[in-house]
Length: 210
Image 1 (tube, rainbow, N blue to C red):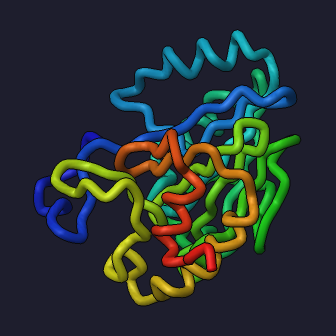
Image 2: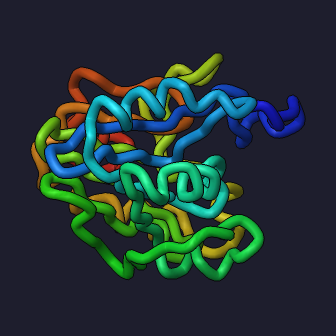
């Protein structure tokens, strides 16, 4: 992350390294919060060309708009691109500067097997479920292990919610994921959870099997 500064770290901050996700669905190349450093689109260009289908762009929250606007311009004509974002997120016109055709209220089908689910309604954040690989992609609401923080998965601290939601509201919004057969969790901050994901999520949400 090129504009990160050390004062953004700390006990309730975030590390310099953040992630983005590309998933090759049957009907579209799904890009989740693309982040392109210094205009180096080569890898995504190659994916778009080899996949040969339109792009489905999911912006999980205003803070992760990142390179989304550039992607909309770059792929608008070929292979074509369509965007999804929370309707709440669109109020942040400073960050959400591009056209979003698909506004998500609670949940929405992006393409077959991929859903966008509201996980922090106050801040307009979406979490993505990729059913064919049983994977959760989380923006800010879930954080993986990073640096000295060795806990495999945790819900974001209250400070990240900027007074628009509470941690308990976020947990409640995420709990329906416990009904799904989760095999992997990819938080965009911190390490992914690639084994024992369902139980790890259950612990993070403070939900016991009883």
